[in-house]
Length: 328
Image (cartoon, rainbow, N blue to C red; front, side):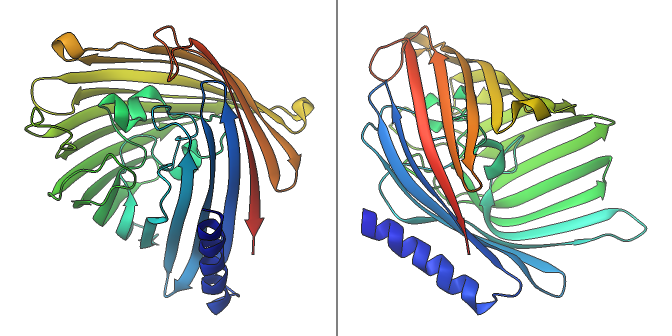
């Protein structure tokens, strides 16, 4: 496992060396432990930057493993399945003329539904993905990826983004090949950003009872002022025919000047999976912080309460993770 992580870093470093004057390479080395019985470690490495003629590239790979596959600890943005695998790998460009903004992306990228980027969930202060964004809950998955093309058209204040592709998911919750459609509309006014998203795809074939299509709609919003950010999503739909999944979360992220290296975070969330006798209705409440102990070293600590129980049956867990970022 250690050799695989080192090899992944080496590939990124060598790739960055080809275009050292324009591309940037970085790697996040992570280790963590949760009192719900899960320990984890991993490395996420990426190369990004301009490649000429107005185009930019992103190339990302990951290796991560956990001692407890039933726990969702540390799975906020990457799969922890013990395999080296690619994540995002795409090129993009945009045209900023006097008329509408046109942005084009092609390759392998995260499903552009709602608040979906790696930076939104990876090492932001939260160790776990929201319940509604963890694939094991018959919901959306933060490790869902598309291979295809994405076009964004509009103005900074109002835009429409459309993605057409086929699933190339990372991790164990993988969807079969099909034609996917994702549409997202976003608008902002002063300090408020609001988005509306829709996804139509095929479900992960976890058993013979899975049939039909996966269809979700969602609303997301952000507000920021004076070092305080509020963000959240509400998502509803069907993971497959005959069942529904509905849920959402609200995050508070605070970093004021007097807090120094500390960023405080809190989350309130719910999920309702209605499937007859197999229904589940978890609620979860999280409070934590991200502490930058050095320029490239940070600690994430979170205490969460889930009345319905966690991986080992406890209702309260303490998650702690250490991340070092290396830039070449």
